[in-house]
Length: 249
Length: 215
Image (cartoon, rainbow over all chains, first blue to last red; front, side, top):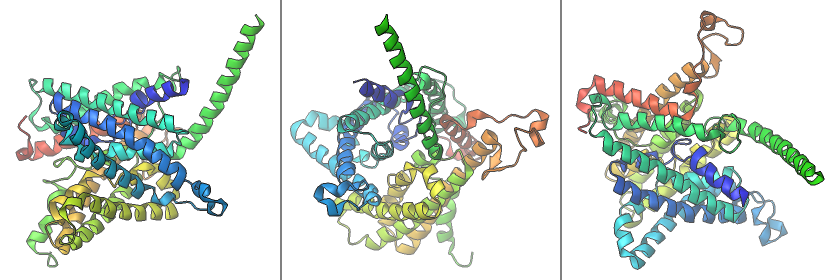
C-alpha cells in the first residue's frame, strides 16, 4: 500500500511529466489557451496513459525483456527482443487510441464530443510513449504499480496543463513585452512553475536531497540507485531498531 | 548554390530562421528541452533527428501514392519507429555512455511532432528530393536551437563545453574562477531549459518583428 502511495505522489509531483521531463510539451503548449479544452485533453491523457502503460507492461514482461519468452519453453530462454520495444509500444498506443475512440463514440457520444478531437492527437503525444518507456527503464515491478504509474503520471500532466491554461487566460489582460507574447511568455512561466515543482523534491525523502535529475544523468542514476538502496537499507535498519526499542519498552 | 535552385535552397534555409520548427512552429519541444544540459548530448540528438527526418521524409515521399490515407498515421509511425530503432542500436553499439545519457529520449524521437508534422505537411505531397531537402532543413533548424540551448546551459551551468573545462578549474580556482566567478547551478536543472528557450524566442522575435504573435 505504502509503495503505491509513494509512487502516486512521486509521479504527480516529483517526476511530473511536464515540469521534470518535458513530455507532451507540444500539445501542452498548443491546447492550453482555454481551460475547458485543456481539461478535455488532460482527461483523455489520464485515460489513455492508464490503459496503455499496464498493457505495455504486460508486453514488456512476457515478450520483450531478456529471457521473457521463457514461458514458451526452456529453449526460448535466451531470446532478448528488447530492440522491438519502440515499435511494439507505439503500435499498442496507436491501436489503443483508435480502439478507445471507437468505444467511446459508440457508448458515450457526449464524452466523444468533448474528447473527440483530442483522441487522435494523443497517439503522437510524447507523454504517452514516454510513460511506457519510463515504465520500462524504471523497472516497475508489477501490474498494479504500472497501472498506478500510468494514472498518476496522467494526473500530473493534467494538473500541469490545467494550471498553465488558467494562467494563460489571465495573462491575456497583462502587458507582456510584444516579442514575448504568446509562446515566449508561456515557456518562461512553465520554467518558473517547474522551479516551484522542484521544491517537492524533498517531499518523500524528508531531507534536503535534491530531486533525482531525470534528464541527462541517467548514466549517474545507477549510482544514485545504489546510494538509495544503501540508504533504504540503513533506513530499514534504523526502523527495525526503533521498533525493537519500542517493543522492548 | 549552383547545386540547388533557389526554391530548393529555401527549403533548407527557411526552417533555420524564420520558420524554425521549435521557436515558430512549436514542434518537437519535448525532446529539445530534456537533453540539452550538455552540448554533446544536444549534438547527438540533433544528428539522430537529422537522420530520421531526412530518411523518413524520403521513404514517406516514395510511398505517398501507395499509402491509403485512412491508415497513414500508423504507416508513418512504423517508418519512424524503424528508423529510430536503427539509431538506437547504432548509438548503443558505438556510444554506449551517450545512449545511457539520452535514455528514453532516443525512443521519443518517434513521437517528435516535427517528424509527423513534416510527413503530413510536406512528404505526403512532394517528390523524394524535395522532401529530403525539407527534412534536412527542418532537422537543421531543430539542431541549431538545440545547440544554442546546450551551449549556454553547459557553459553557464558547468563551465565546460563538450566536457572540456573552458573557464578554468572551479576546484583549484584557475581562469575565471580566480576572479570569483561561480558556476550557475540553476542552468543544470530542467526548468532552466524552458527559460532559455523563452529567451531565444524573445531575441528572435525582437530582431524580426513580423513574427510577433497577436495575443
